[in-house]
Image 1 (cartoon, rainbow, N blue to C red):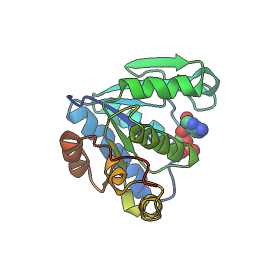
Image 2: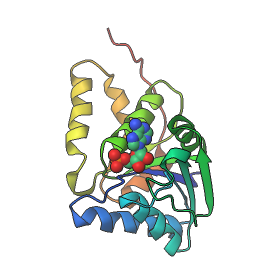
Image 3: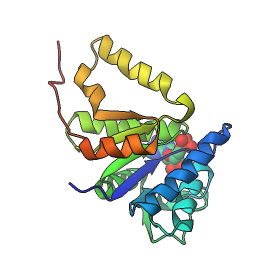
Length: 191
Ligand code: AMP
């Protein structure tokens, strides 16, 4: 399947390492320059605002999806290409899943982790078959990757499930792996 719509999950804060913002803005420009459409959570705070604004500034297309109750709190960015308000968080996530061809997870907080793990756990039970990349800027996700490896080492996930996500360190690596990605599920239950 052609990859055109990239759903980005990331922090509603920008974090303390300036590299997080620099790499996020570079991602927005990369999406626009390569004719990918951004799908994201619709807010204007933190890295979420930065990825959307940098995509738009570079002439790209952006779909923002946000539940009603977060429109004020997350300063919804309304001058996007397509602005969608949902009733609930669940409806938002389902719409993001439906529209996305692939996911990129930038550094973020608990909300970002939840979104990543939701998409990964949905992949392992075959609800979707789309590639998911951690964009591991400055090693931000090393501990999470180690934790996922530990869950496989200690028998809570088949080793092959670690291939359901990409641990990416730059955009060329992430996008080339997106285009090669094959969703292969080993048997989930090992004992
Ligand atoms: P954070 O990484 O905590 O800054 O959150 C990033 C974004 O994830 C927030 O702007 C929320 O829109 C979204 N989010 C936060 N909590 C959840 C959750 N429990 N489920 C889904 N999305 C969430």
